[in-house]
Length: 290
Image 1 (spheres, rainbow, N blue to C red):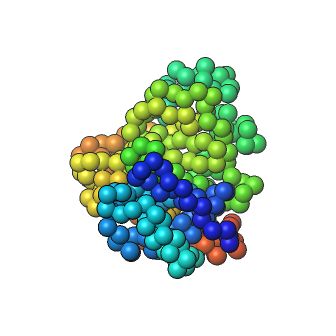
Image 2 (image 1 turned 120 degrees about the vertical axis):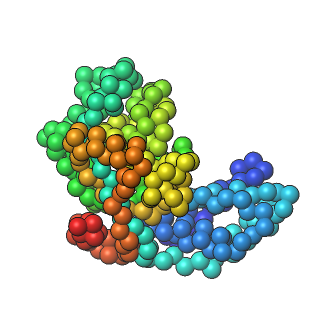
């Protein structure tokens, strides 16, 4: 990735940086290195630094820092930044009730906006990915961990892609037309990206299930949300764990009682180790949760 970052201004208060034309872990790590270098500068007038899949954006106050002065400082940070190949992060087990009744009811209301009105989202996803049935798709979806590459769209929503070889990536198109409703904490998928809808609202990703685990809570009522109301951050690793309805109902009761918790473990992610062994290395990450 020798190509320099491409910069452009968005109106008066934003600097947009395209790290790469294609999304990859290498692009993510380069963007992370530059944004961390920018944050270390503690530039007066820089309000937000937001890292995405293969880009980042900086919001600034033009009355406190001139746009060209900011650009020069960021380009200087880019020149000096060294993209680290390891990341101290965490692996998180997210329980999921796949094929749940709430997303099923919702998807049935919007069949006229779907590629295959005769099938559910899971049935459609299994078929176009060449898998035998819904159970096989769920096994593939929960069989390898996922890497969170950005958080956005709505508050707290994580975008993630599965840590498997490119030919094993699960891919499904978005709905032909967006829904006007998506249940809160729906597990969604569009293209090769998975997500968890942090709040109820419109959406276009295929719906596979729901998790009982809140991931955005301004009240910060659960232990794992005490540090920040937005749970996920770029670089997190997610392992989905299928659950049945009884376990889901119990987890919801624990959430309502205020003592639900997630299994979270610290882990070091090595980009080189993953690229060298994209099959075995994710298994070693999963073992951290054992």
